[in-house]
Length: 85
Image (cartoon, rainbow, N blue to C red; front, side, top):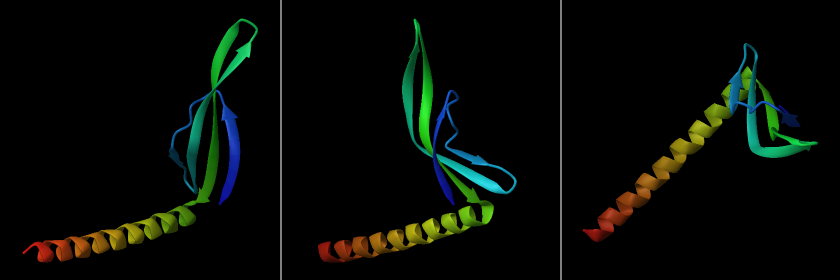
């Protein structure tokens, strides 16, 4: 995984999937630049580069965390429901 700060005249995609790599853009902010009488917009953002394997592992880990969180929420709701009856 590599993280770099990028400034570009083109608004980045939040995620770009290539053959062997995945790029994730975050913290995207618009920056107005003045050149004499002209103004144009640039975008500054963090770009994270993953190999496809790294990104698949990251998604799998997030999926497991979401499943665990959902299970915990369901158990708490069952306890609340049983307490009401």
